[in-house]
Length: 269
Image 1 (cartoon, rainbow, N blue to C red):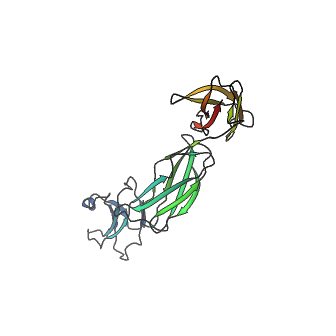
Image 2 (image 1 turned 135 degrees about the horizontal axis):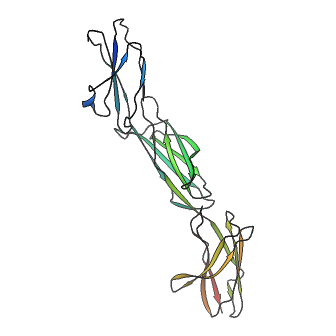
Image 3 (image 1 turned 120 degrees about the vertical axis):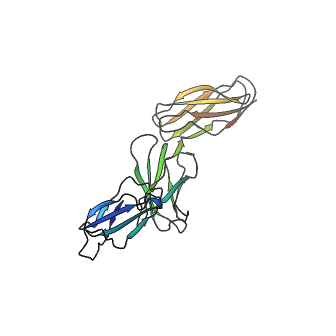
């Protein structure tokens, strides 16, 4: 925190004492930082930004007479970050909502600037993904379309007589988009069905799994690798009559969580 003041008009000033309460008014007149008569600013570090901080400057002459104190209070703030969903599907929109409040009375701070920053989950530094101004209730909203697992934070840099604050990280996980179609929805026993589709974003060379619902549990019955265009194709011949539930699963990778395509029904006559 940097303090500045105009100084005393008196020519008898010998020194200036700066007191900071550290969030506790009972400590206001503890041990001061003493500056010479020409000083007009000083920096104070190690203060808790979670509390209001009051700084007071008192000028004194060589005999110990003191002038009227001059005080200023820098107010603590609080900021929170909410996400519309913990996990979304590739191509979907995530809404980030930051709320900035004055810490001592929870009043929303209107018209202040909030930066939203993001990074690949667990990797590297954060970069700015958007900047918004808070509403009358202290709320700033940003819509993002993450293409991989991400972490986001919101930052208020502070302002006139207010400390800045930053949120912790909020993770947003992304599923790949798995599309699936069947060549037929019914067939006679002894015939084969083709199950094909695609995965977005592209994951060429990675595996996808064909699964069948058996006694309430999904069982993998075939595995193929995605083509260079991130498409896949299975051919399956049922061994008995009945109605089968099928789906395709894309296992998790470094940037995406496990995802599943739509369940498709196949009737075998």
